[in-house]
Length: 195
Image (cartoon, rainbow, N blue to C red; front, top):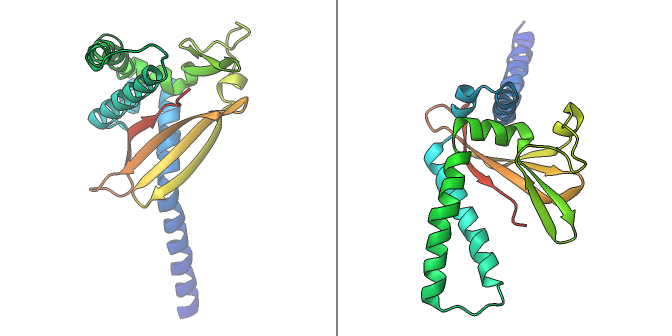
């Protein structure tokens, strides 16, 4: 009797550990399901708005600065600084504000924002999700992305999504564990590919 109770206790413990390990995968699946269903309220409940907004603004600014630094034109520091501030306020901030709306996030997670390779060094951002041949996207293309999830630490999980045709272009979604409820996770950072 004691042996069977110990075995039952061990089985329950293993099941609970497995469930606890899988919680970020389940949260990401809920995020994905909410996006496909167009349920903006459910999708937004898994987002850490301030962290996500700041991370996207920082990433887009870094991408812009990298592009400017590779520019062959010589500019003074004053010209460069004013140009960067103008682009940040006129282009980056409105773009992030649009993306950070419930509708923008649903569109982003519903695979409607896709980076496509058009030639060796050129890429195109498809906001409507239509494939390169111009046909309306089918469920097959919609869900053809490769997904890989992994723990970075106990409280940090990363889901990497890439298109099999251009695997070097990866979007990484960072989930962090809620300190008050260790089974809850929230999205606080999206690493967009630098192309």
